[in-house]
Length: 180
Figure (cartoon, rainbow, N blue to C red):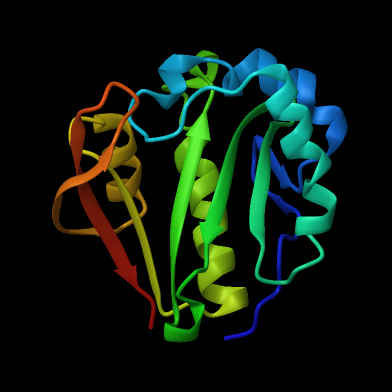
């Protein structure tokens, strides 16, 4: 396995590239400030100040080859419609975790599957991860369907895995793919 960092990837409809400070307006317009995008996760929607602060640190983060974090850009419009990342926190054991968020105006169009497929191939073929996993809250049928389309196998349910803003605990379903 060789850490390669965030490199631009391209699909039929998308460009996956590092985030830039000038992405702030597009991110705010399309996904980061929408509470519905964060419905199934433990994070919360971001304020404009938080978005600018986050994007101002991106350039430094991308200097590290273990950073895998892409803006999902629709080629036709140039809009940043979401994010996808590879959490390589366990790279010494040869595995990683995919995570994505897509703005509500872009739901149901196959963008998450298209972006995740490209990142999965990159993580497997170019970086060399042996195990690639993803998880979502039980009830988040759209994300679970993306994992299935990626060829991942359901491994189980993690009970009361994290607590959301309203104070209640959510179960998470775990999927994974072993790479030969």
